[in-house]
Length: 192
Image (cartoon, rainbow, N blue to C red; front, top):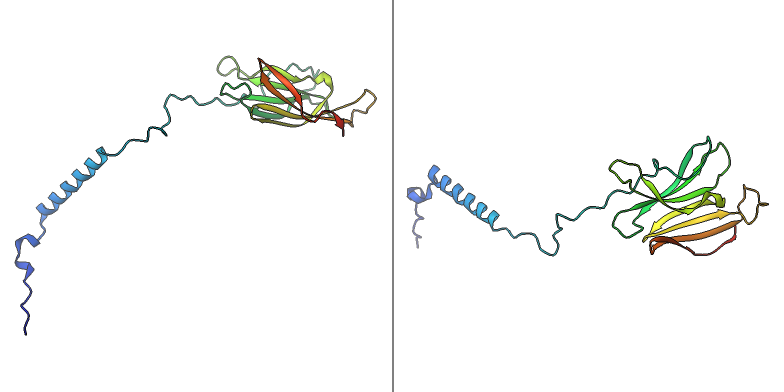
């Protein structure tokens, strides 16, 4: 049994792609792509970020502030700093440990809270003193966590204790409450 011969496709006019065919195909594809672009879904409403939401400002710089610390002819130095939103306004404050920088020894530290200057470009300003240098304490640790300033303070139980060797250690914290920083002692004073 002999099978019929396959038709010769070269004789069919509709099987030859000419320039008009390709031009029509390109136009149809472009129209589909353009229509798809117009019909794209918008962003999900619940996850879209409002354009008007302000970004928090940078934390104040500790180096240029005017601290209430008399050092005579010795320079002041910022020994430690930490930043965080302490008053809940959405902008960070900076907490700085500052002391005089003599050529030897470990001078007492002051702990200060800084906020941005009143005008653009103005240096940060001190808004609170958490540890007065007159208490003759040194700060070994400083952190801001969940709006609380945490510090470890080293001090002296009496004037007879040599200034090289603090014999008291306190772990303390300060939280902004009722318009002021309120101190809490985590572990109280203990021998070092």
